[in-house]
Length: 141
Image (spheres, rainbow, N blue to C red):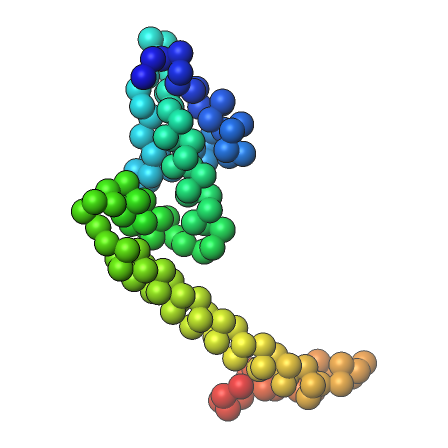
């Protein structure tokens, strides 16, 4: 690949709607490596790097962590040495985590609704506030 075909970090940032700092952060986490450096020392990136950053963005939008993205990137970059089952396993693990988090949030929501329903929110002193009393009690919410 000719250096004239390579992109500087600012051009890469514009193409991917990421900041230079975000791109450098991904580099520091090992998710991206500049193809080479210019004679002046600028990082230079290829079209493959654009695709990697777009892949990172898409995986982030569905909730994958940087460690999970790194794992998925490894599977994507070396498909001949990995199976679709490995990819599915990563996705299933994330789905289990998200489901557990949703369940926890629903439990929290129900507790908050219960506390809110028990309090009239009137002008009386907070000393007699039902919510504070519930939070101070040993009973599970």
